[in-house]
Image (tube, rainbow, N blue to C red; front, side, top):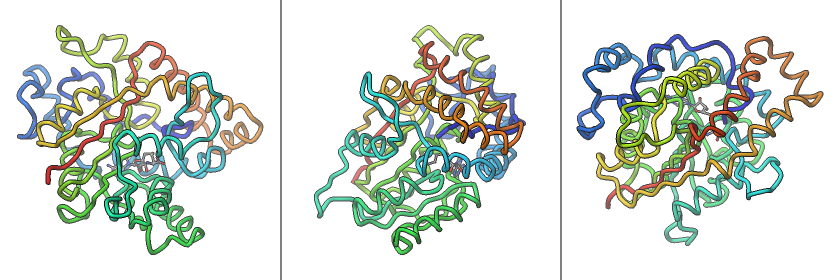
Length: 338
Ligand code: SAH
């Protein structure tokens, strides 16, 4: 999502936002050497090591944020808390399922009854919009995890209301320390949760760990632009803009889509594909802002209080980031080897 509702208090981890971007992936042995933190940033990485699971301040902030804001988001935009996918020139409407379908198509997830996914994990599930859609589409079992207890309750209630309680289940759990044994799922799904992860290498490592041999892994996430070969990090004015967005929406440091690709390669994942869908999501933020300016949106925002309003005021920064080609809306799909 990252909606008008990713608002609330600035996270207490601003330190990270000024790291050179190549160091923002979390240091693990699987990290290729060119991604290893530079000497300059090692101290800062060490300082943030305590936040590589969601048990830290960041995780608490994310949980509280979604506890507070999910109801408002649902009342305005429905149960899918992510960008919409739009054709060029098409008006922005509520198209949650379109984004899900585009991601499945991009990753070539098979519809064939013999090959379609049967066990799915939805990492950072929100109130389970993707989980229920995928469970229905494939007749699969889907397990969703989120940091927000309020989201779990709502996701469960919606699953019961749709008669899906035996196929879509939800729990509070950390994506960086998932409560599943190795090799469980034949579709591993992360729709707009990666941007919240303070350690991208650990994040992708967990996605790969719970994936069954041959499983498809799909990550749809906010990234920053790729760095040019001569660049060590983003420009100061770019970092400044991202800092403001992080402060409004409980996000740690960002990385690029090619950083994700390098992580996937380092984990020996196969058929790695990525695409920049920034153009396809461009109408989204203007539409969110328009919805916030309706009577319902406006009164809901007011009821949520100043922190939510402050977040809403930060929404134009997302548009600025896309316009400046700094923010990229990326999909990364890959497969775990057989
Ligand atoms: N995928 C959902 C929700 C996206 S909002 C949808 O498309 O509707 C981001 C979600 O990521 C929230 O549910 C939030 O709780 C979850 N999240 C963020 N960090 C997480 C973490 N470390 N572990 C599990 N969930 C996390």
